[in-house]
Length: 249
Image 1 (cartoon, rainbow, N blue to C red):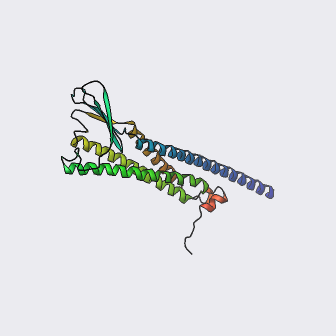
Image 2 (image 1 turned 120 degrees about the horizontal axis):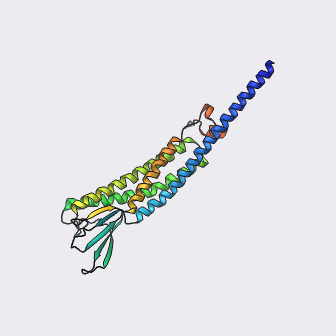
Image 3 (image 1 turned 135 degrees about the vertical axis):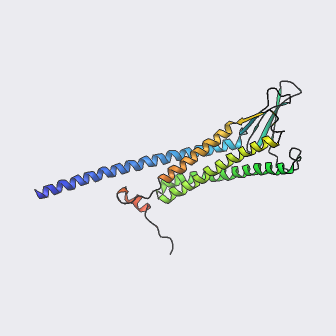
């Protein structure tokens, strides 16, 4: 009788352990699916970011309906700005696009050197952030995919750190664009005629969506980068991946 009772107890504990193991495995698979989904979103966000940087619809300026100037509206991006003006008092509009001027001696900026330097600093900062963010985003996506081949927790934290850096750079770029637009509105009447209004274009909203995706990726990868110990171990392979590695000779 004692032997039968002991066998039943061992069988019950074994069944409970199997259920816990299956539950932990199901949780692990759910985490992997979430990581894959957010990684695919990061790939999509990288493409969206390139579209936002290559289009000139960040800031839209519309002339006052009662204005008599030929200026109708303009749309500006990271690299260029386009002016739409009426031709010889007719209803026909003509678009003129040009890259942002970085020359402080140009006619547009020559009137006030301090304003010229500030405007140029805004433009250079935006361009530099655009280039750097375009280089870092693919790195974050590559590290994210690598975590599926090497489940070690440190690589998830590395991917989370790169995603945090990417989201931070996107937010800084957005804020610099807004700061430059507000400064230009008060100091550059040629870009912002009196009575005109300015709004955000689709490129701006695309950039905001990219920031949201990478900020979410940072949170998800960081949350799933915990070391699994004790009863949380799912398999020997994952346990070995989370073991401490002593660096050095």
